[in-house]
Length: 242
Image 1 (cartoon, rainbow, N blue to C red):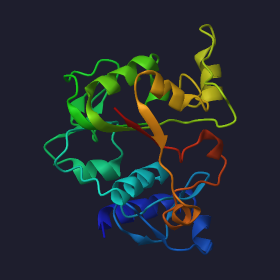
Image 2: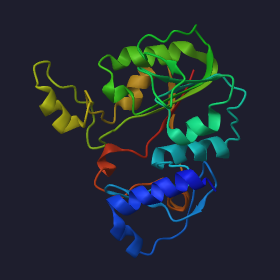
Image 3: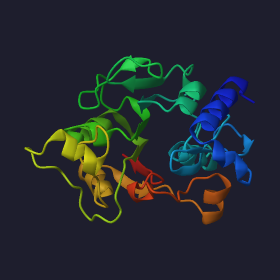
Image 4: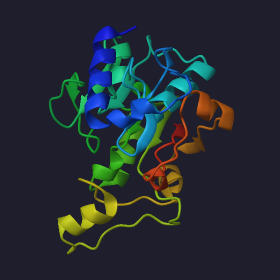
């Protein structure tokens, strides 16, 4: 039990949405830290967060895939953009772990620009890029750079807010005011991805698949979503190999 994180998450949940504790909830099992018990609401997302490690849905989907495929990151060269806290705590002492961000951060050990990655070709065994590309004006260059630094046979993981009702990604007109773009796409987002997102990854050279899980596992580990933001496809992670 991570007492410090647990107390912090329960206090935050009690302040932000105290009525959630009046509802009976089933025990969930975190795929990252192994905690079994009540998960906490995050805004409109019921039972979204593990109180023991702070994991969210997409974090636990990653954990589910790594555990199911017996992938051990401890001896790998791993580039992780804007690292999620559960994974940063887990991997930060690994010698090959690069937690990169565009600026200094408490969950980064290196400053990295996704459109100009200062590592040689084929350096990394794995690349993790969750909810980054929607902030990047030249997202195609970011995808190319991720492909370039990934070893042949390596694996990259991508996710973005994705509207499954759209067949094509929406790019705002150049003269659209930023406030209008954010109203449509979300805070600090520069586009809204559609179902063509995996095609964009494939266009730079990746072989693309999607992490899949059963409805039972989705419920057991709280990987699936049922809330107002579900249209953004927050429970979709694409596996890309080179």
